[in-house]
Length: 345
Image (tube, rainbow, N blue to C red; front, side, top):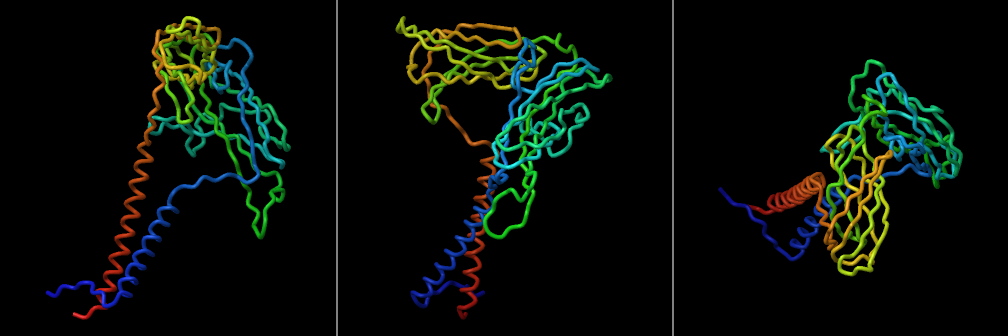
């Protein structure tokens, strides 16, 4: 059997081969670049969304989340505000999507929620003028035969141009109805209604410094009641190394802590004047008339926070690397095959 090998008759042959390999490498890199998801936005559309507190001592509703605690057969309402950040008229519509758990994270699916008939908005749609705002009432009506439990869904506040020709473009184009949407979770506890227990424990705290050299104190909580938590949190720091050194209060809120036994955090930004040292840290947390205090004797050393890649990002990177490597090798193999065919035995 004869072996074929690449023989460079001249320097130009070698240069030609390198150019072919380089061109295939460029194609491979372009393929990798084009396979990376790009973020898109709806041109000239813009809305803001804010849930309004009830302004009372409701255990579950005096926060900026669409949370409800109702008995079967009861109804309850919350208000939210939609604000225009656009210079054109926008049509605002409301729809409801199923909530799913994916990789431990609650998110909206592309399917209509099985509880969509529970929800109504007043108004059910509207035209939002430039730089204006409207308050919307969301009402939840729980059917009488609903078993006790927790129910999740997402409301989508959608925006589209009232008149697509209002959107200014340059050059030749076709009119496309852009659409922009904002998703907000809805959490309904069906059972004892407002008589449900709201309770929590303040567990622990730690300090860290972020990539922008801002200092934080992160406080851990546990939900020990039947209602979701969105705690208002404040903390005060008194140095144990220097008796006259005092900082605070610093204010913040906890991330949603939805279920009994679930743990979560409040991440409070503190002044950069807070130096490393021993402190007496007073934490105050409250919601719906339930107030708890706890004092920690803690060393705040503000280590750098370690941020790792998510498993999904690592997998995507490996896949793209394999695709790129495969394309490069395929290009080199094709070049070698052509060169081999051009060399006589």
